[in-house]
Image (cartoon, rainbow, N blue to C red):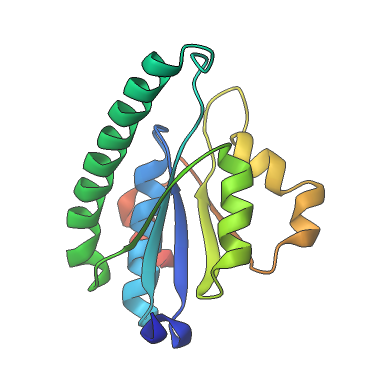
Length: 158
């Protein structure tokens, strides 16, 4: 992946939140305007069924298939906006741990893009976690996009 060494790579964490589309849209527009690329990280988190090995294996396969389908749809959506196919990472583990590990392992990633939640529970677990003590250990900046922003507003600022 030598070509990404000189490009800005905007990493978006893919989850089931309503704000995902805001983060994806912002990252794709920024990538298009800066000659960069979008990277997508989906983390398959462990289930509660770990003591039932066969059931857990089946559940893991189903979650992996769902993750691949979601990532495929997002790539099709991002390609025309960003001008290049996103880099895709699918990992298994705890989301925040896998995110930090990927950032440390992949030098091409240059910016983390997250969209803030708009609900009463706050900005979201990743933003809450990453803006605490772990922020000092990050080697890249975090862009937090307002979760209530419209696509038109995002186009103006990206």
